[in-house]
Amino acid sequence: MSEVDAVEHVDMSDEVQTLDGEVESQITQWRRYVSAHPTVAGADVEELEDHLRSQIDDLRSVGLDDGEAFLVAVKRMGRMDDMWREFASEHSDRLWEQLVLPSGHASGSDSDRRGLLIAVTTAVAAGLATIALFNNVGIISDADPDGLIPRNIVLVVMAFVAIFLVAKRQVTGWPVLATVGAFAAAFAATNLYPFSFVDGHTAALTAIHLPIMLWFVIGLIYVEGDWQDHAKRMDFIRFTGEVFVYYTLMALGGGVLLAVTGGVFAAIDLDPETLIFEVLMPGGAAAAAVIAVWLVEIKQGAIENIAPVLTRVFTPLFALIFIGFLVTVAVTGRGIDQDPDVLILFDLILVVVLGLHLYSLSARQPGDEPGLFDYLQLALVVSALLIDTLVMFGIVARISEFGFSANKTAALGENLVLLVNLAVAAFLSLAFVRGARSATEVERWQTSYVPVYPVWAAFVAFAFPFIFDFV
Image 1: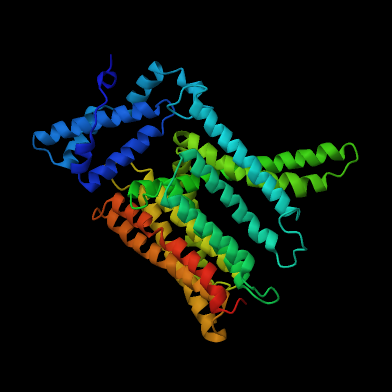
Image 2 (image 1 turned 180 degrees about the vertical axis):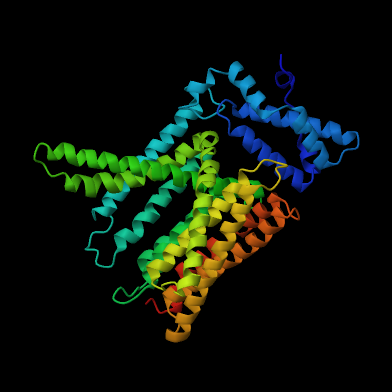
């Protein structure tokens, strides 16, 4: 019998309370690494962590400090690849089971059936509600010259995502009340504010920023109200990226399905345009959002391997593009176009950069020394910081020339929020590659800064219409 199998499950709550924050963060990263392997079930992860903490406690009792005890304990547990081979040989029956069931659950368990039933029910309801709204049936009976339907669709879909997570995770109490209140306020602002749709911009700003705010409100459901926990904030950020990956893959597959549908019906001289654009596309897009969240919920261990791979691929590519862009700007002397669409594009790109940076940090193993990839990350963050600075200069110049407007003020604020994040991230990353800071400190800064984004989004969505007279 292996050493792992001989370990008894014990309650290590006292040791958890006495370990310092740095070691707790390293244990969280170690557990994340263990959980990511498809042959390790939830109960095994708990057993392995108990074993690790027991080893740490024994080592601390003989005089090692927390950090030394952690490193020695991990070393004693052997190479992780050897552990995976051991688990795979002893639990090979799980490999097929885990393709369709969450780790740690028996085939066909009540919990699995319940989760699937909630997902399917919520997805179908989201699809039907979106089809009804999209076709102006029953929900909005009048014509829609002011764009109420497109401004409500995203909120409707996100409401069903929130409902799914509440039911799946069985969350109760203040996080649910806060979520209900936030969605009620969002629907009220979208539908009751007296926006000017002739030459106004605040309606579009509200429609863009409300989903950002609401997604982080949904995060309260995901972390079950414990937003102060750094590890849970990191889990939600990872969850966000994984949902994006899954939804993108499903959208690509859905696009192929719609194309095949059109071709099949065209072969018998029927035009399926109404079916595709008024039923399948809106309904499928809404249902896919719920299914993507459900898939990430049950397959976190498998999908977590995708994010580090994507980070490794796209970090050097983004770094090369950004550096090339900065060199081109320096050589040609051209400034960045201040068209609103261009500014939105740059903001999205900078958010992607921050996401790549954060995912690379979360994928690091405890004790890893800075390497070439960390220098690429530093180059990416610094170049993004310089680009954001150029954008800021352009926005300030336009405001000086033409005055404040809702769009320019929103762009200024958003880029300022990004600028602060990038500046501190660049400083900490530089300190990390020089050995003066740990990767955990850089990660903690990023996750601690996250609440700034929904706060700013809420301010733009709710306050800007009043500040700029709903224009």
